[in-house]
Length: 301
Figure (spheres, rainbow, N blue to C red):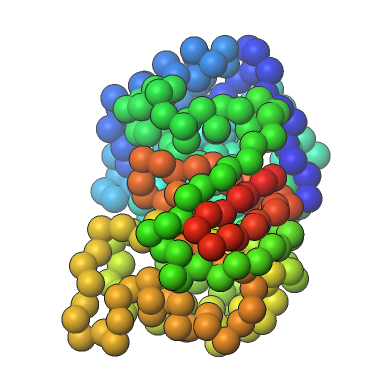
């Protein structure tokens, strides 16, 4: 798995919208942050478009992403937001040039689609905050600071207290290739060539706005697909914007824990990754080390 080269001062960065549409203020705000990092930001032609749910039609979104992937001068592709629509591009993308000239692709949520596609090509990518977060937070929060550190070549490690979920966590150590992302999007790839499950890998999952029974169904789908028999560790990130269902047997996180109860891999709940302010960047596709203690977790890449 190739880790893209570290960014340098004056490198070119492209902000584009491969899925949902976004307000211009967030894209321009993110561009200002990238300028302060010493980069040369460029806004893709259709990044601010409005085509119903999307930033553009398939051809327009594809053209922006393909151009940025192919241009050797572009060293960073920052996806403006997730939403829905990145899957439309998968059948049409040509990875020939980016395989020869890897670069950072950054985003999360629906961008899980692109992370999976890049891993199939042997290229690591960054599951991390996008344009709105950068515009709103600037460089004031830890997630953005870690993101900058990783992009400019630093190695990061996280030591996180998990006292609120200590009864759900399962202690242990794991080392393997990190993969996963948004649960709904990742599950939608099962049965395709893009759902590549690394043996002994560390799976991370997050989601937002999904009813608990739907999350339960997707976790069972992962189990039935044999995924939990292959992994070496599991990170359950933030599940947000939902209401507990008193018709379910247990609260959502406990339902997830029940499904993976019979396995022995290290397991942590409440990791700061997902649709939250503290959305810690993780390098999808790269080897990671996970140590889960009784009330804390250490993560290194």
